[in-house]
Image (tube, rainbow, N blue to C red):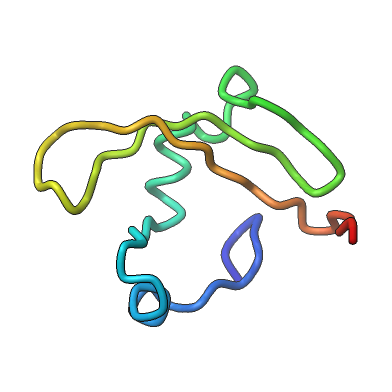
Length: 81
């Protein structure tokens, strides 16, 4: 299980299911959110927190960065149904 998150399928499986999906590792997400800094946090709730991040577009091959939202689920978060 990734640190601070839910288990995810390996990138190769995820990209087969959703070919347009880009996979980032935890270190990339941590770096893009400045180590999940409070100033990058957009909202917190029982489920976890949403952070603002600027990620490099892996598919373009350029240094262009795109603004994204990164959700970090709380290990004991409450799921609302």
